Amino acid sequence: MAQALFSLDNLKLRYEPFPIGLAKPIMSEEQYGRFLDAWPPSELFQYLPKVGHKYSLSEKYNPKQYHDWVESHQIWRDFRGWIKSDEFVWGVLDALEERHIDLGFKRLSRAGRLKRNLKNLIRGKWWKAPPQLSARFEFSMLPADGGCVTPHTDNPDKIVTMVVSMAREGEWDPAYGGGTEVNRHRKPELSFNRMNDKAEFEDMETLETYEFEPNQCVLFVKTFNSWHCVRPMKGPKGAMRRTLTINIETSH
Image (cartoon, rainbow, N blue to C red; front, side, top):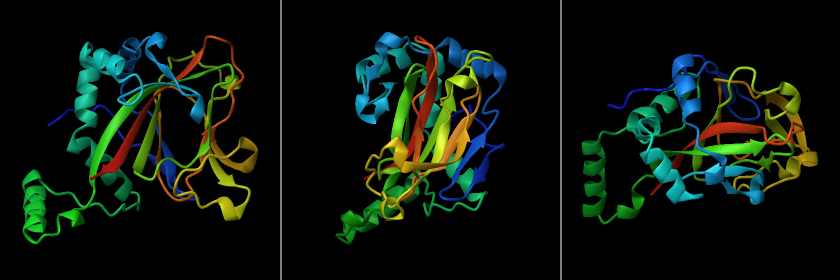
């Protein structure tokens, strides 16, 4: 069994207009410092203008550099192993269910999954196999001078997103901005956004902002109206808003 590296014991949710909340602290200060010490260098990241003003290093963006970095650092190998484990995925879903958010997925053992899939195959109903849950993470950075993420609701295959702040105490000035906003579309007829169309900042009403602070995790559930964003920041050139972004999603 993979060792748990985060704790959601302190997770507190709001439920409108979609489930979103904050867990703080997310890990011990000692563990948090080790993650910060092993953060990848900026030159490994890929620029993603299509989502705002953001840099990413992940299985999808600069995958070779991502895998090389993870493989060469024990802390990230252990972290990846935990994120990919059933213990992580179901630990998050259990934490949500304890807070009245039942996403409808049922946990089966490996033997149970094989038995179910074999039964569907024998019946000629292999296409009825329910979607599987998996998890992945990316290293993300937004430049303090103008970095942003445009309003969106996340792709349909995402189930849960976790945004873990990566900053040392005193490193980030709240005046820079960088908070994760809970949004509501100003036009009710456009609030339904299952397929994750992008919107403009001026289209959004701000309901709450989770400020960017060390050792915390903003967690939310993907819904038809899970609008959120990070507005353009006003900090100094060279400073970066660093996060680990973790997604639990469906796959077939």
